[in-house]
Image 1: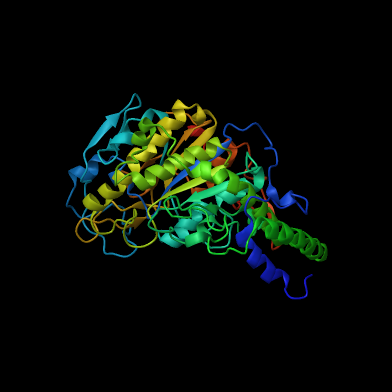
Image 2: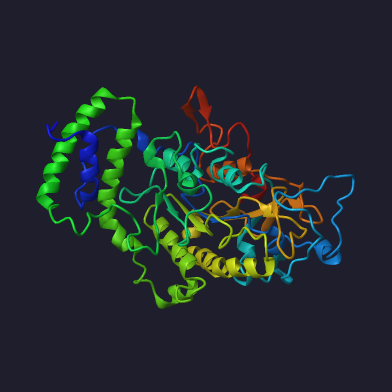
Length: 467
């Protein structure tokens, strides 16, 4: 080791100078994943659209005539059942401010808030009675992303990365595209690898930022970093890493750091083309709404998701809305206004992504998912808002291995609680893994003396929506 520096300082200085030079692999790549699935997969990759804040099922997909008939009446489900709300006093039953119509050959009801997705219901498989054991954003979001209510557990994208790795060597296995307005509830821990090797955490790409991926290139003002200095620095780093790894063979963090540098070096070559949508046709840009203010951000990220799965990314997560009390799906104050804004931002791009994947043949081996952490109450909060509801919410699947034009489960007559065919986040994740060719009961990682799973000790594959 150089007498004037230590390994930590040297890594910090070198991290901004990777340029296009890939690090030589110093250790076995057992932490990369890329294991063959135990049985034939229907899907090779996943795109997950996550509606941050709790999208209101009874204003989007869950049509309830009783809410119209009993609008303004106090909610009484009968049987002495206690009616509670998370942060408010339950108000009167409130009908949706949107009109409803049946669509497609399946006759699926969709509200007028989603005119674009409504045209694609025959491609979708709906889970109409999902439930969450929490109606608090943080725990419920952890549950829907990682299968646990507490932080520190790997999210689904990290598990998929660990199990299967990336399809291509020059892109990450797991990419996250957060809302331009900020990160979702739980911040970066929503994309964590938890106790899995650290290289399986989500690679965060800020699609509209000047530097979408940080630390891929040295700062422009650092003139002393040259190709020659980088070559010499990498040679010294290899020697330091060999010595460090030999002393700590059980520690995966160095392997993850090395592999993250190697991937960063390869990604430098791929990223400019991957993130550049200017070469897309005018028709494609119009399809995703890139020229419209309301749809430009989510539209670009949906288009990037398509470009990423085309180029080998295994799991892409696209977030609609950020953490906080506004600019998301946490609509406590004004359903007519707030849902309208969020739906307009999301509807056209999501429908465009579905249509584009289908037109390109990518939907045959790509799983597209739309979900949220919980739903909203059928009664009002204050004036025209709705409080959190873990009793029922809606998700849908489309694509590889999914039966199109079907719905599983049903909520009660008010869209208050699941009535039949209730599904949990464990079932949700078990089904995703199944479609990727993974048995959710066998994908495990020993941690703290326990064989941990994405589905914990629960979950069953939702076969009713499988082709």
